[in-house]
Image (cartoon, rainbow, N blue to C red; front, top):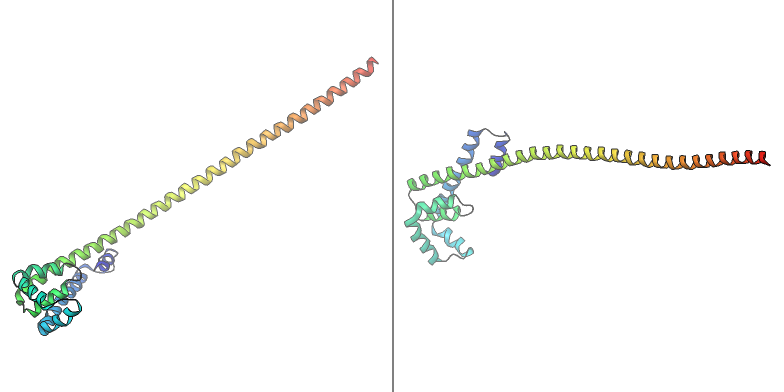
Length: 196
């Protein structure tokens, strides 16, 4: 039911067809367990009760409780996971009236199917939203990575240009000073020769 609710959100099923299948399946499941309990009676409870450590005394207490609270018991066990089978077997073995059983099972089935399908649908919405969020995150990361790469390239160009410029000026200063020194020496040498 959860999966079908999620798949309905993604457009795999028609609403009324899906509701009809889920509702009839869950409703008929309850009726089937009731009929098995009605046909087998206490034999089924005693056979399975031994395996589940259910004594004859506990079965009698359940029978007494079930006689006074049968509608409440069937409804609550039908809307909880894993408890409806034993409750329906007891209802069948105690020969609960059909009218009561059908009305309670009908109401519980509506509630259970709506709740489970709704949870599945909400999961589908969350999954869709997650896809949009992931797409937004991927776009944001792409922009961030592009900006980081661009800034890194600009930083490399700036610092390498600065380094090259600094070295060029250092070399130029050295060349300039050596050129001036040579020119000065040459002039000194020229003027020195004239004096001598």
